[in-house]
Amino acid sequence: MTAAGRSAELAIETRGLSKRFGHQLAVDGVNLAVPRGSVFGFLGPNGSGKTTTIRMMLGLAGATDGSVSVLGLEMPERFHDVLPRVGALVEGPAFYPFLSGAANLRRLDAADPYAVQSTRRSRVEAALERVGLTHAAGKKVRAYSLGMKQRLGIANALLSPRELLVLDEPTNGLDPQGTREVRSLVRSLAADGATVFVSSHLLAEVEQICTHAAVMSAGRLVAQGTLAELRDEGKVRIRLVTPDAGLAEGVFARLGMTPMGGRSNGALVYGDSRQTGDGGQTGDGGQAGDARQPGDAVEPEAVVAAMVAAGVRVRGFAVEQGSLEDRFVALTGEGFDIAQ
Amino acid sequence: MPNRDMATQELAARASSGWPLLASELSVLFRRRRTWAMLLALAAVPVLMAIAVRVSSAVPPGRGPAFLDRITQNGLFVGVTASLVCVPLFLPLTVGVVAGDTIAGEAGLGTLRYLLVAPAGRVRLLLVKYAGAAAFCVVAPLVVALAGAGIGAALFPVGPVTLLSGDVITPGEAVVRLLLVAAYLTVSLLGLSAVGLFLSTLTDVPVGAMAATIVASVVSQVMGELPQLEWLHPWLFSHYWFGFADLLRQPIAWDSFGSNALLQAGYIAVFGALAYGRFVTKDVLS
Image (tube, rainbow over all chains, first blue to last red; front, side):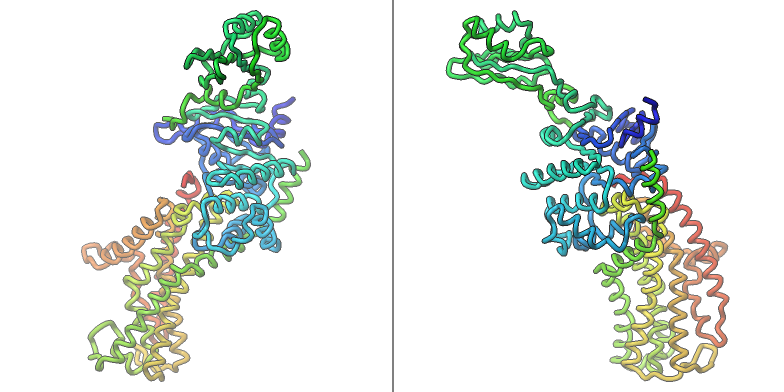
């Protein structure tokens, strides 16, 4: 496939994108490739350069080095062709506190030279309805809760039909109900064919709604791909609860499986250095074995069969996929420290 | 990708001018409580002045602001006197607030990033913001002049007006002159607005830009008072601020109006260019 053809399939592409603030390199040579039609999770601890990258994508900040193209066009040069097709929520919602929610949206819609004036009111009403704010449309934003402002921010991104939505921490400040609504909203937007770029530090959120993800750490892009690729799919972990730990170890070894974890609280736990060390469960006198299955070589059912054949008393057996959290912690380090 | 090209062309065809944004800007500015408070404060100046003159004994000629002694003879002079009183401080103060708030206010609220992503376009936003500040420069002196004429007409007799040149004009003509004075002050404040617009692009803290703009107007006037800086005087934006007395002669002397307009146009060009240079390349991180 030619480079041009590849670029056309990408909703967002950054090439060696860098941003320097004084001596600090906030974003360092980022090569993002966001396929069209994907729901793309942009992960990273606080301060890892996510928002700065988004600002450069939207032409709010200039790149120190490298380039960005959005919807196949160079940014910021082609902003007037690109941005009307992009809805954005950047670093939290911001509104005029002395205007009502609806008046705020009309104001921001008026700033878009391509927005059709005659449909402004109806589009604002539709956007407010979509985020469940119809009842508060006439209320001054000063009186809105954080969650309501967040919803209004999302409504602003939905004022016109968009090909790309850039949502920076969209569920920030939302209650569980609101979080669920945002998730279903993102899914419905994706179903309509829009590309959705969601930045978040909430892994569970990304895991539930995204098809692709990228991980930032200290200004660098440390991983990107489909969610399956990132989860290290194919490497299934097996959690075994048994009183016959020694026997089970032998069976695992014969199957060519490696232990993940160590001994803790008297329970036998398997794992490796990439594990967070979240121990196995222990029953009454039972011990948990936790092993990683390399490749697809051994089927989980074969493991059970082998255990039973060897006389291991199987009290519990679970097949676990590598979680995004494991991968995330492996890439960005333990603890959500603010990157220096 | 033909459909994408079409999308681009379709957008280009639909692109409107900046008028909806300007209309939105004006409605936000003039529906804001702060704007109303400032305009009411300006209107209070002639009202307080007229009431003070009305309840006290006759003002001896030559004391107090110019024309004050004429108020009792003709109520329309309240508008002129109040304009004169408002020139050095009250008008620059309110204009400083509006002009200093233009970009920094949006940055402070965080709405600047949403306007730019909309996309308002940086040049267009700058023009619209300046137009909003200029609209305030039209309204503010008008409020002073008309509130003055109104309260004057209510408290004092209104009749033919004797001009500085000794000619007498009808009250109708006098109102036209009063509007000309307001227009003169509008032009006078446009340079200060451009300074405020530029200062506003330098910071995300609107109060800072407002204070800096007001300080600029004070500094300009103080320098205008220093004889040592006489060479500089014609270049100060406040140089012609008090020159509107020429509009109260028969025939009208337009010289100071023209010189003032030229000077203010120079300030608009210089500080408009500086604001453009700063804002177009600015990283919006607020």
